[in-house]
Length: 378
Image 1 (cartoon, one colour):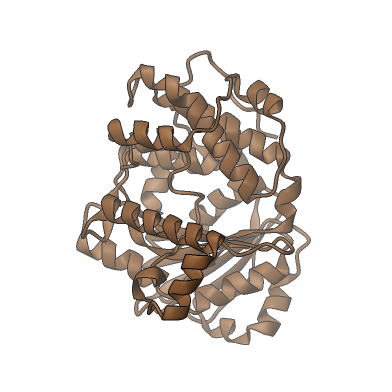
Image 2: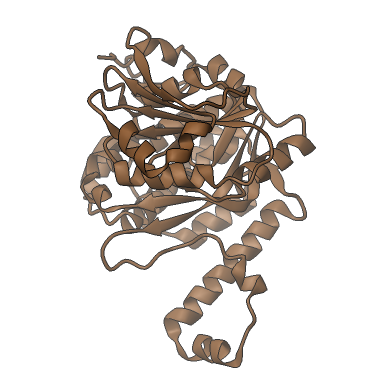
């Protein structure tokens, strides 16, 4: 087991070798495809006991429209897994692809498995896909169009959509590009005029599109700075992120002690030494599934991580007085996350976990503060 370093009264952004945590734990290649071409990129799928999701994730990677060699790497965190056999039965053409299926000899934990994906990758660029998330067919091409156009980029993450698979839930998509391209028929306009919920959705989509245009203008990507992370998980989770393998090795990968906020701290360490961009296009899908309903402890860990991010950044990369806005940010994130993932975590538990008092949820006030301080993410 890993023993986290002791918490200090003044948290700082530390660097260490997260890859060494499970250095003695081996992994075995259970299958390797016949294509051994050296890849420019590796799409690694981190999986654990979800064969149906794994099949979907693998299919989306196989569907990539990309004319350069890339590798498909599956790293299974279940030592007893036989998913490789099932996957090859359903997708026999994997045998001819640049493909490896690796099984860890012991469960390394989520971030340990991510680190194993990085160390096993053969590509100079790595994208880690959790088995329940998906990539659009143009994902790799979009990312490399940006990389080819700007040699300073060390990592780039696309915008993402979220789809809710709880029973009876309506799918939510951040992608609103269809609003600009769909034909506004009389019946559609009438529906927007008469249906209050449809009208509200239309206004939200217009507002979101205006926000995206404000962020990117005519650019396909924008640079993400360290101060962006003060305002919350501005890039979502790790899905749709491709980065230089050498950069990830340099910062020590993911750290187990960062808990649910491990991807946020990975990004913060990344931008402390390297250049991170966000792509304007939506090219990845993040699944909200039934098993999230029992993840109250995960949410508490995420809230604790967000508060720790505030303490790390304040006085170093943002003014210390910005901590006055921490309760507003924590409350907004808590409200959005609990609604989106169908949780019901008491406020008292969150305040105890973060050591901070939450405020009334005031999204408009927070948006105004962020705009005035130039904190609309980049």
